[in-house]
Length: 163
Image (tube, rainbow, N blue to C red):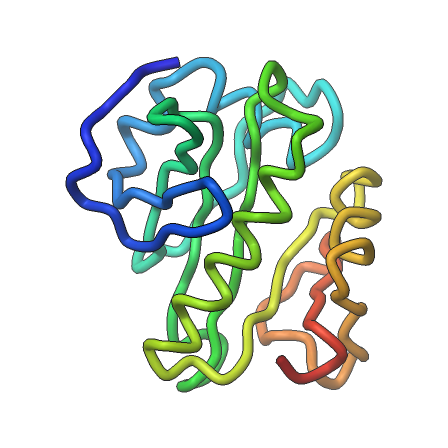
C-alpha cells in the first residue's frame, strides 16, 4: 500500500482518515481493486459495476497507509440523502473494524454537510457485505424505498429506516 500526506482529508476520526482521490488512481491500485471486487462477491474476477459519474471517491487511510476505499454519491437518490456505493478494505488490512469506523466517520461528515439520511448499496452476492451492514446497524429498505433504476441484484440499507 502507498503512504501519502494528509492533504485532501475530507473526514477523520476513530483512527482513520478519508482522503479525496480520483477513481483511476484507486482502480489502478491492485489491493484496492481487489477490495472493490470482493465487494461484489468473494474472489470476484469480472468487471466492476459502474459507479455514478458524480460519485466521490475516498481513500480510507489508517496510520498514514491507504487501506481501503469509500464511494459516496451525495443528494442521491433525492436531495438531502447520500448513497454509499462502496466501503471496501484491502484483504491484508481486514479484521480491525476499519470499515465500521469508515461508515461512522462518513455518516458524521455527511450529517455536518446537511445530509439527513445515508443509504448503502450491497450486491446480493456479497454475503459478507450484507452481514456487515446489519452489524453496523443498517436494515434493508422496503421495496417502495428502493432507489429507481435498481436492477434487483442489490440490497439497499439504511440505519433503522431513517438515519
